[in-house]
Length: 201
Image 1 (cartoon, rainbow, N blue to C red):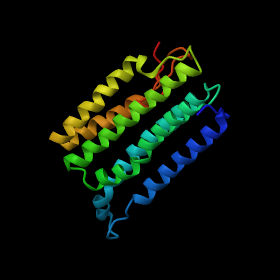
Image 2 (image 1 turned 60 degrees about the vertical axis):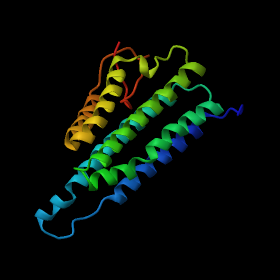
Image 3 (image 1 turned 45 degrees about the vertical axis):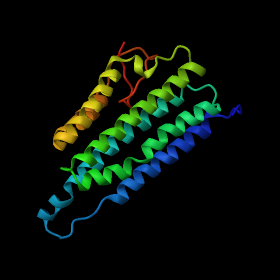
Image 4 (image 1 turned 135 degrees about the vertical axis):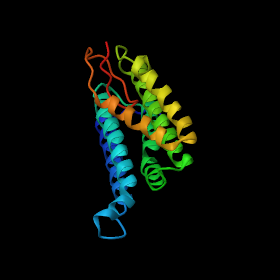
């Protein structure tokens, strides 16, 4: 694919997909079976998992916007790299619902972590494609120590989830909080949560 198109279509398509992802996650939420306040405890794990996934999707959306701002041209390779990221993100509603309904089950919680890891790696690949083709001064996502540590922690969370699911969930939450904290750095630095902007020097 040698055709070149404006980055506006890429950004609009990505925004639309991300909006649909959030919409599907909301539709997966289930109300309590009863009407008493105590009945909320039945659905609380699902709501908490939804909130966590919403934060992750939000981080990717913000960071994707920052990434696309640096794009000078859009070629076929960049389109496929972007679709690769969106593919893994599109699975977030499904794995969120499964892990939310089975918060103490090792496999659903571990799979949630696997998906977070794949989203992180796919964003790194998208960042690498940008650096290679459109912005030689761009700092590749994996160049950040914080990103490399996050990849290790995502992998650790998968193992912990298989042994004791709540421990894996704790790591997922801590990583989300870590990437919500802004850092000081030059404007030329860009990275992820992976998924969020890393402002290390």
